[in-house]
Length: 100
Image (cartoon, rainbow, N blue to C red; front, top):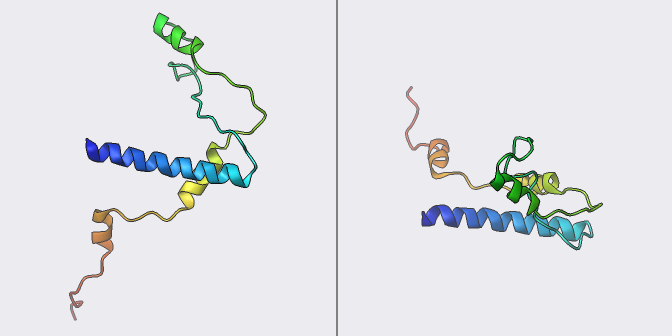
């Protein structure tokens, strides 16, 4: 469980760093993390009391700044990723000589 938490933290930090870099490059002074939709992500109107309370207690913001999610994802996807140990093992050249 600690390993999973450490991985989540690492990914969160990478997203935060890429977001900050994008904002600095594009003169964006405030970045807010907002969730779209209600607890009912299917796009349907909230039905239960809990869904309605979640919906009306959500933060809402009007902004003319564009959603930068796709731009940040492009930055993250462009970064070179280390190979997983299993993948690295498969691509490792073997010391065996090919059969003649």
